[in-house]
Image 1 (cartoon, rainbow, N blue to C red):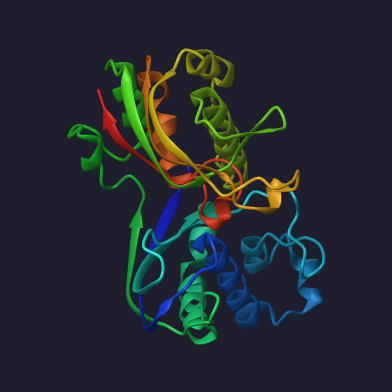
Image 2: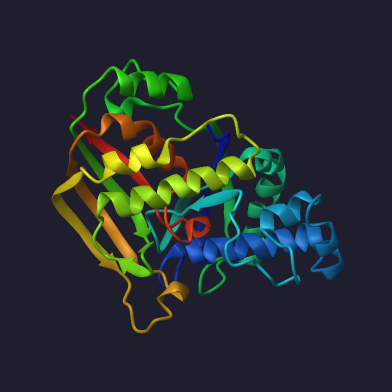
Length: 292
C-alpha cells in the first residue's frame, strides 16, 4: 500500500547515551544535522531545488534553510530505541515511497551522527550492524500463518474472518488531536481517524494513488469499537496551550472490543507509518499484541 523500507541500526558507545526526555527528538535533530553537513552544506540556495532535490525532500524543506513547514508530511519516520541511557542501542528509520532510494544517504548520515555525537552530552558512537527489510515481512506476531505481506491478501483476510477483539501496545508517546483537543485516553475512533488521514497523505506523497479508501464507511465501524481495558499512561505534562511543542500523549497497552476485521488492514499499515503528531520523531508507534 505504502512502499516502505526499514533500516535498523545497532550502535555502541563507550559511555551511556543520555537523552533529555523522549529520545526520538534527539535522533531526529542529529539526523537532520548530519544530512545538512553531508549534503546541503547549510547553503540556502539549495531551497530553490526543493521539488527536485531528494535530500531537501527528505528534510521537508521548502522555505528558508531552517524552515520545516507546519503541516508537511514526512517521507520517513524514526523508530527510537526502547532502551534509553545505554551503551548499546538499536533504532530504526522507515523510508516511504521515493525516499527509499535515499537509503545509502541515510546510512552515511547515521555514521556521521556517530562522529557528531548524540544525546545531551553529544556522546560519540559506532555503528556495529545495519539491517534492511520491507515492512510486514514478519507476521508471526499476529498469530495468523496464512497472512502475507501484500495489501490484497490483508483485505482478503479481513473479509473472510471474524475478529472482535484486538490488543494494541503504543510503544511511544501518541499525540492525538481531536476537535482541537489533546486526547489522553486512547479512544479508538479518534486515533483511527488520524491514521486514515495519515495513510491518505502518505499515499499522495508516494504517488501511489491507485487505492480507494472508504473513509466514511470505516469511521462508521470505528465508532462501534469500544475500550475493554485501558492500561495506558500519560507521557509528558501539559503546562500550557503550547502543548504541541512538547511530546505529550498516551503510551502503553489498550484492549478494544468490536468488529475489528474490516479495519485490520489499515491498523497493520499503521504499525509501519505511526499515527498522530510528531511521527517523524518516532511518536505514535504501536504494535498489535493480540487478535481474537
